Length: 235
Image 1 (tube, rainbow, N blue to C red):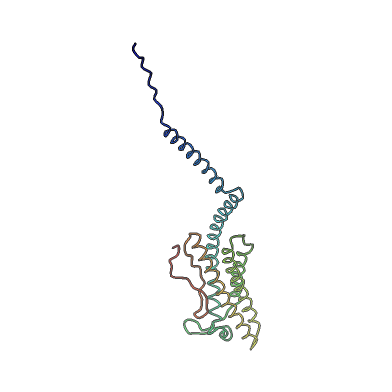
Image 2 (image 1 turned 120 degrees about the vertical axis):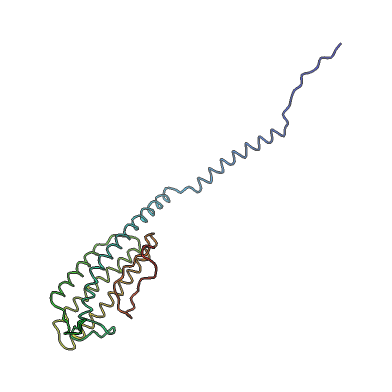
């Protein structure tokens, strides 16, 4: 009798099963681990709120810096004639010695000029308007607030300078000289304080991406006032 042949059965090697099992475990582990990492590093609701507030503050601060720069330029243009007028009638040879009688020779070397009532009225009007323009400031970032405060303080000091000069007109002798000396120091302090605010404005403008902004008042040599750096405007 012939022997009937048995059917051949192909068996999957045990090694293949182990490889597939390891791959499945690896993939599952990667998915689980990724979820854990995402959950651990994802900002919570508080952190998301803080980040959103910071972004909004940065946008607001950038806008405030541009507005403050425009205000500083406009104010400077209004104050330069005041300073030039005070220089004509109250020149200062040093920090404590204004010219006597609040007069100075004209550019042509003729008769000395005196400040008129109209001159003083115009200076008061200009400084009062400048003071008002810095009234009720908006709340901003710390360094922007400091820049604004420096400029605002300088404007108030210059307004006081004009008042002191006006008061000196009603005095005579040593009292008049002393009052003019006080007004001269106030004027120098005003320009110095403005230079500090202008330097702070320049710094925050650069940080905000708007480049250098040099908004300085003319300062007498030796006054100690800060001046613009060598960088180009807007750079």
